[in-house]
Amino acid sequence: MAKETGRKLIAQNKKARHDYHILDTYECGLVLTGTEVKSLRQGRASLVDGFAQLDGGEAWLHNVHIPEYSQGTWTNHAARRRRKLLLHRAEIDKLIGKTQETGHTLVPLALYFKDGRAKVEVALAKGKKEYDKRQTLRERQDRREAERAISAARRRQRA
Image 1 (cartoon, rainbow, N blue to C red):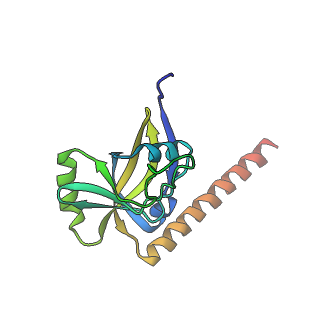
Image 2 (cartoon, rainbow, N blue to C red; image 1 turned 90 degrees about the horizontal axis):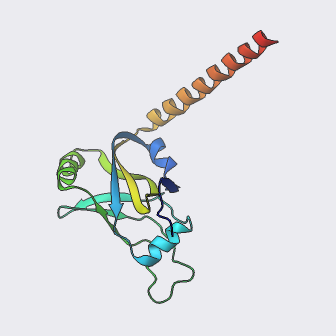
Image 3 (cartoon, rainbow, N blue to C red; image 1 turned 90 degrees about the vertical axis):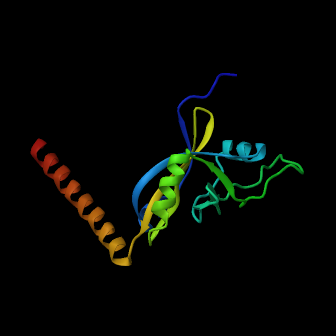
């Protein structure tokens, strides 16, 4: 069988970009069981309630839902078990210092296969206030309206 290349997106956490200011991102490997990998290859996962935590010098991913593999037997995994993240020691040490600051957390942004290996994009994030969320939505809406006005003006010039 040919070796996989490229990036195949499995799940994305769009809500995290709405709820948090993204300060920095890290690509992490995951320690998975066989049935988890098979379930991910079917494109089934949810990052909505997920978060990462540093515990005892190791990084762990909590509340990420990878459903049980349909053809699995007694070897099937628990859907919301905690999974170990694979990061370099220097990255973990840096994150330990940054997550101890108030309001900072680690949030999964995307789950994907990269060259056949499961990866998670984890972000160091700071929670947004309600007015920040409204302002972000307003800016996005203003940008869309400006683009529509520009494209309408271009159409009128061509005609």
